[in-house]
Length: 350
Image (tube, rainbow, N blue to C red; front, top):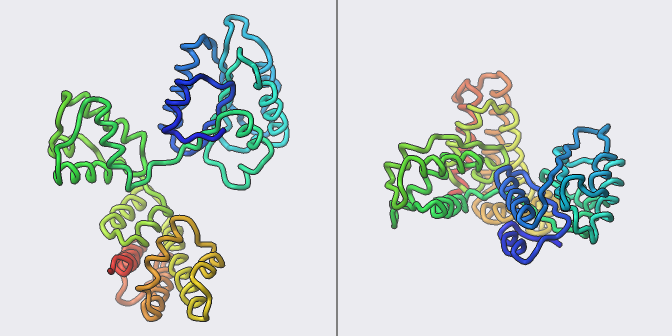
């Protein structure tokens, strides 16, 4: 059975299953989901808990199998928690997991909880993960998208009896908050808790939020690509500053920007030769959210604009590797910012 995270609370009210699987790369939401399952289990008499962390290829799965298949010495019911940080249990682990799933069926004395990272498509097609999904309750825990982050913050504030002022000022306050914690949900949670300690329940002013919330945002190059293609100029500037401060490699940032330009050019050329847009996108392996961004941006990408951006990307490639180019900044990050800003401005055109 597959559930979404918002469905978990209602599911737990109806009764526990013997096997749960949480997988995703958002530590805060994974932790909260696991806490909810454990709390419900404790309330139903699962008073003992053992935790097994799969540390590598030589992990001894016999301990997990023994725990899952035996009764507790000190309690009638127990929780067996298995964490696989790599998401790769190996051949022996695959066999053991399938055995655990089989032993969990109809076992009212043991609740088995698997905690996994985000899994790629190939891993999710594996026999061991298929057994987990078919034999228990599987919940994919996705990160909170940037567009949904202000509302997420507002809901968390509401849970502790606080709210921002109504109207445009409140929206600006939530946007400010989201800008400071983007990509770092655990820090966002901590900043929200901080506001609960600093101020009483009720309405929070923009000044109170801005004076309390520190800049703990974290960015990655894939989100940068989405921001550039979305034409979010100010956000792109913040993300580049953040990536530079975090020590991200300039060549990786350049590769991401340049690959988007090359992909846009290839799709545009394919369309010019008579291929339909959906086919051209598939051939360039452009899908999901990136596909929608390409569809929006391509109509305004003239051949001259794309050729100009390709030339700029070529020049910046040399700059980040130490070359000097006339009329361009000598610093690699400054050159990257100019390239990204040019792309963002074009993508922002209506």
